[in-house]
Image (cartoon, rainbow, N blue to C red; front, side):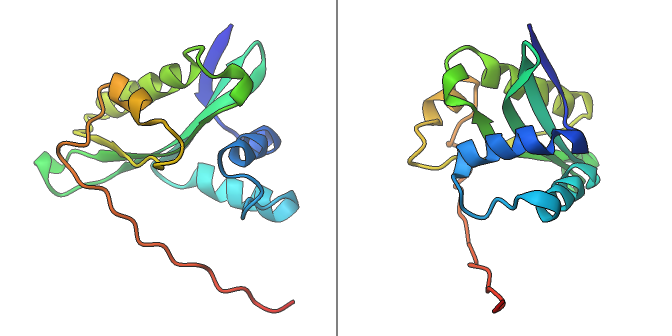
Length: 152
């Protein structure tokens, strides 16, 4: 049975496994500092990490940021990040269910659009296009800053 729910701080360990499946070992803090960062994310106003449990095991997740807006009648817009499903559970409709749940949440909040970026190397573009997302309206761009490391 599949259940989609909002993550809690108690989900840190299972979400940590999913984050690692998404980005590997790079910059995913473990232990107390990671748990604190996760708590900051899930308690941030407008942010929800949705987890999909299949038979009681967290196998997929996505982060929704629902943001206030001044245009479109003040209706909010949404950004989706960190969509991931464990490799062993891909192709079973779980990520689709998470993304559809997110769309339901955004539309219920009278949001006017949902945006996301996907990496070129992950091969997920077709998945998002099948859900109705398009690259025709917008051109996604990213500016990254490599964080400076303090000497230990």
